[in-house]
Structure formats: structure tokens, C-alpha cells
Image (cartoon, rainbow over all chains, first blue to last red; front, side, top):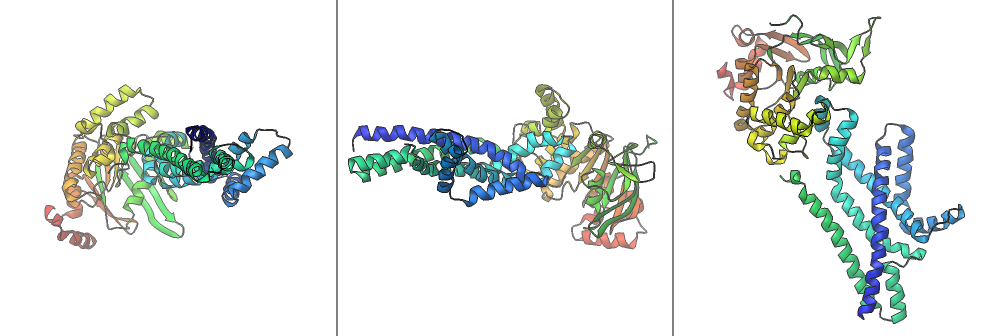
Amino acid sequence: MSWKLFMLLVKASGLTLVISGVSILIGLALGFVICAGLLSGTRGLNRAAELFVSFFRGVPLLVQLLLIYHLMPALGINVSSTTAAIVGLSLCTAAYQAENLRAGFGAVPRGLLEAADMCGFSHFQTFRRIRAPIALRLTLPAIINEAVLLLKASSLVSVVGIVELTRMAQDLASSTYRPIPIFASAGLLYFIICAIVAGIGALYERRQKWARR
Amino acid sequence: MNSTVPAIRISGLTKSYGETEVLHGIDLEFASGEVTCLIGPSGSGKSTLLRCIAFLEEATNGLISIEGEALGFAMGPGGNRIRLPQAEVRAVRSRIGMVFQQFNLWPHMTALGNVAEALVTVRGMSRSDAEARATRELERVGLGHRAGHYPAQLSGGQQQRVAIARALALDPRIMLFDEPTSSLDPELTGEVLNVMRQLADDGMTMLVVSHEIGFAASVGSKIVFLDQGKVLLEGSPTEVFGKPRHPRIDQFLDTYLDRGAATLI
């Protein structure tokens, strides 16, 4: 396999990285909002958040992507296929991140919040200074895990015509008749990107001295 | 004592969880400067009573006042209890410091951070002023050299002393201790009790739930013995532990004999 072909794959993996990177960030932010809904005492918000999570967890991502890709123009929203893909990936990953965060918030020991209470913290102060940082820290491995899963799941957006890493590999494989080295290279690139994301997560985790026992 | 208004007044306090009533009408007063030890068998309601005084649990009935000011509930004009707004609860509660059995230090902050946090977030002090104050408090409990350590890097006894410093930094008028040494090995218990003894000598009003009978007898100015959700006895250590003894106290102390604690009395 020529160096030129490999560089085409590297370039395409740039698009993979952008699409999943943006989706991971939007998904995390949206996940926070959904999580607030899951934890909310208001029944309406609660139900809406639960419905959101059960839909996006219960329907295959491939089906979601095809649905969003066709639904948006049908609703008169004209967006590029890249935007449609990011919307689909973000919504899906938000559902999982919301569940991750919910578990994290639930795992913050009650006593730590009582200590904040006794030190005079308001609800919001407790949330900002105690609850959220601890929940985030407890959730970090699960959040990184979901980010890596999303990175790999982004290969599905090739079905809506985006020439990211997987689609590029398919195109090159069919035009050169050399599928094995090309798909092997694509796999290697995915592996490297995921290793980097996991590495960043591990680094961040290690920086948190307080986790050490 | 040195004030006519009691530090804490509890009247007609009951606490139920569902159908089960665990505290049956408690009436108690604690004078300022007094060190009161709440003792009694497990399940007697000691910790629940302390948590009601901290307003971490809401009493089902009855009133609590801190230095004359109603905490959480006040008597309305119609003789019915009314819940006070949370801001008022916070204001009255700011006179109380609390130390927990499980320390409850915030794991993502250093010892210094734990002590300085509320000074910055709640009291609005600058970070550097707060840290200067926090350093003094850590030195007071003998942990100036551990300021930069995270809770996970400290022993249980050190963690509990940081927790005491955290409470003291907020200038409480009253300190509540909920079984402060129950999750420590005997070796580490001493260092925490020493800090508490020092605090008592400095004249702090203290309410201590503890199984350390020796500490209660030697440091306590008053002993309250709770049994099955009621105050069975209250008085000075000599009155409660001296002879002739209430048979229930005898029976309770017997459980400590094998640990040699009763010989301290």
C-alpha cells in the first residue's frame, strides 16, 4: 500500500476526530442537562429525561442516524450531512453520559454534603464546590469509556455519505482492490486515536492525587 | 454557668421514622461552656438527637433553640409549629460546628483546602486570608505540617483532627461531636480525644456522643444517659457513675468492663 493512500486515510481520520470530538463535547454538555432532569424532583422534567434516555439507548444508532438524516430535511431544516451526523451522535451519547453522571451524583457520599450543610453552604454552593467535582471525578472512567465507544461508533456516519475514516477506507478498498492493507490501516488509525483519548483520560485521572489510597 | 440563656434548649422533642418513634419527648438544656456527653446503648437515639440539634434531621415534634434563637421550627401564634425559612436555619446553624464519625472531609481538597473552603465560599474571605486562618486552625490541632495532604493521604486520626479544624475555622459557639472516635483504632483515638480535651479546657460548649466512657467521665461536666429514646439520667459524672448507681448504668458499664474502661471511673 502506497504512502499516498495511507495519507488519504490519515486525512479522513481527521474528519472522524472532528465529528466525534464535537459530538463528545456536545453530548457531555447535553448529558449534564438530561442528568439534571433525571435527578429533578419535578415529575414532568423527570419523565422527559427518562423518555429521552430510553429512546436513544433503545434504538440502534444506525437507525437514529438514518432517521435524523432524513427527518431534518423533511421538517424543512436544511443542514449538511456532517451536521446531521453530529446531531445524531451527540443525542445518542448524551443519553449514555446522562446515565453515567446520574450514577456519579448518586455515589457522592451523603456525609460529604451534610458536612457542607454544617459549614453553611447553600444548595448551589454545595453543588458547585462539592457535589459536581466529586461526581465528575467518580464518573470520569465511565465518561472516557463512552467517549471511546462514540469514537468507534462514528464509523456508522459513513452511511449518510460522510467520507470519514471508514468510508474512505471502503472507497479506497473498492477502487484499489486491496482491502486487507487498507482496512488494517484504518483499524490501526482508530486504535491510535482511541488510545490517545484513553491516555488523556488516564493522565487526568492520575493527576487527581486525592484518589490515591 | 456564665449565661442565663442556655446554649441549647430542647423541649418536647420527638422523632419518628414512619411508624417508629425513636425519640420520645426529650427535654434538655445545655449551658454555655458545658461539656455534655451523651451516652447510652446502640439504638438509644443519641446520634439521632444530635442530628436533630444540627438540623440534619427534622424533629417530628418539639422545638430546639440555640442561644435563645429558634432552630428550624418556631411556635406560631396559634400554638402550631411553623417551619422557618432555610436562610434562617443557616443563620442559626452557623453557630454550630459538627464533627462526624466518618470525618466527611472533601476528598478533592487538601487539608488546607477543606478548612479554608467555607471561609471563601460562605464567608466571602479572600483565598489568601482564608488559607492563613486555616493554617492557624491546622496548627491548633497539630497538623500544620500536613496542610498540603489530601484526606486519602492522612490517617483516620489526622483526618478527624482536620475535620475539627474545619469546624473551628468558622468560629462556632457550640461544637457537636457524633461518635468522633468510633471509626478509629484505639491508637489513633487518643490524639483526637486530646484535641477535644484541649477544646473543652478553652471553654468551648460541647455536646459529645461517644462510647468513650473514660473521656465522658474525665472531661464531661455533664452526662446524659439515653435509653430507648428517653433521657434516663442526667447529672454530673459523679452523680451518674458514682455509687450508688442506677442499675441500668451498672448494666451498661458492665459491657465496658472487659475493655478496662470502667476502671477509669
